[in-house]
Image 1 (cartoon, helix red, strand yellow):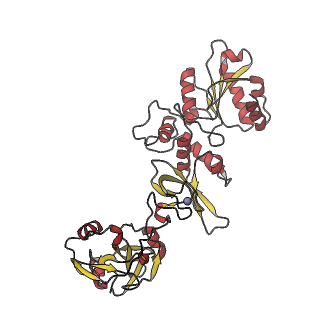
Image 2 (tube, rainbow, N blue to C red; image 1 turned 180 degrees about the vertical axis):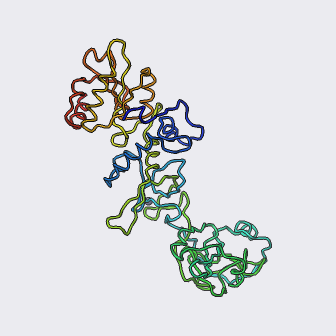
Image 3 (tube, protein in one colour; image 1 turned 180 degrees about the horizontal axis):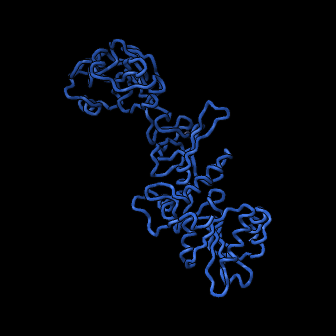
Length: 413
Ligand SMILES: [Zn+2]
């Protein structure tokens, strides 16, 4: 491809909406607009990734620090909107809302008798715990839903110090919505002062930590009152006991006990189970951003082979005596004829402008055709990640018979 055919527009400055260096360089190098839309060069890079993805192991060849489980591959990045729990020790990885963790039961104690207490204006767990002078983990939190499929009233209990994961709840009961006041009242519960004790026509679902937590404070199903010392099994039971709560950073990994980290990520691929073999859906825009984030330096992108859309950035420095452009054309044809992907910067621009653009765009190799070298039958070859140029014979480059021959030439330098 020729530089001008792609209408590449590089930028001197990073866009002011850039949240990561990777995004900033994709915009500056002309792969993306500031509005995060792929340009022609960006589309080219995405097509290249789509092509690579025919090999199902391609993501592992892009030198990306990915984390994964059987269903999904993630790339940690501060701007990522997808939260993932990850164990740095055993590599357990799961979307946060579905992550398991090792729960710590409270010390066992004698079950004490129920005791109804006046608790005015205690509409939240915080207010209740403060008012009664008990820790939040000694309270039961009530969450009331209605199942969409059959309008069944679903009463969920988790410990007061935990957060319900709607995603986990959905796995056990199906889709739900928040219950309406009349649905709550019909069951016998009182909003703000609810407990599962004595309810009618209700599916009770409790987090598996609740049966191990004795003497919890719960609602009395009467406005203004709570009950001390509610106990699962003695005072109520549930249709479903399951893990229903959301993990948080620092919770213990279920596999190895080490603290879990919570990472912001992008999803790079999701594997749909049920297909044989499991087929992956790739999120190519995210993969491009991940590549830019993982592979850049102060001057621009440093995309590795095979991730880069072009392996070679070919340029000529306009000469005074010699037609450097014609020689660059010869190299361009030769590289293309053996299938090396080339971006040919054939603009009549100063060398400095072209070097800057080459650094921004980040092809693994730059080949520069200049007068000084040509006089000795040589052109300059510079790997993007290295500081120095090497000289390579023009004759070898213009008479290639295979792609392997080209890579051998590069390696020998
Ligand atoms: Zn672990």
